[in-house]
Image (cartoon, rainbow, N blue to C red; front, side, top):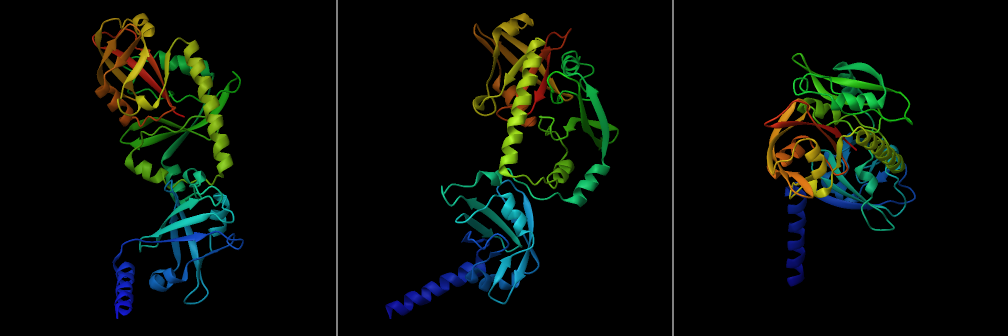
Length: 359
């Protein structure tokens, strides 16, 4: 009798789980036959069979969406087929890797991938993106004005340094420098985003190879469109690209320092609590920031942040409220760099232009 009651209770639990839970989960191990298709567990198929029709979406750790077609041999066997081969190769899946699926009853699966040898999450899932959404890309291209930029990198840096408070808001922004090519002139194709209403975005999108991450100051609509612009890259390709960007960024930092600007590479404590930015006290004094506490204004991309610069013997720092707002509103990350330059003629408060070099 007790066994019968336990079996009944277990059955009731299963009914509640499959009928009322908003998300159901299952795991699947990669086998030798998983390269072209992946068979879904029969228990899962039997309980959600009526919802497995047409295509489903696999959403990976970085938010990329992969549309995969379903192949139904019969009522019990359903597999991921159309587009699965590209997904498999892009994420370097191999035998004994484990995939964890979370199904949300809306044709969407959140997928987490684990390495079969180490048991750890596959890092490439955070970098590999799906195929380009051509419709979204074409729509985005129609709203962009292409311009061609060819200039010596030193001139670009000087242009950044010589900006005044008056032209900060209307100058077409060349703060995001092009890549260096051993000191030679570089031809860089850029796209200047048109935000409508007669205004232009201060963010220049550089083509791949420029070594600079696209600025993040986009409108919500542009961000949504940009999220559909996918590049299919392997983990090795992403690693090589990151190394190339790091080299280019270091070259530009060295160039700015030779011009006499203050360059600060952002550390974890600069972009999170305690939100304190320490800068060179010698640079502050040379630029006339020699008071113990001094009002300043940070200017970047046509916006302004007011704060207090505290001057000590060893280092100077910007008060946390001002710096926190600057970091969060400009979406600064660890590894990014900021180039500081006091705007000539400014006083009480002293205006400082900030050029952001993104990794």
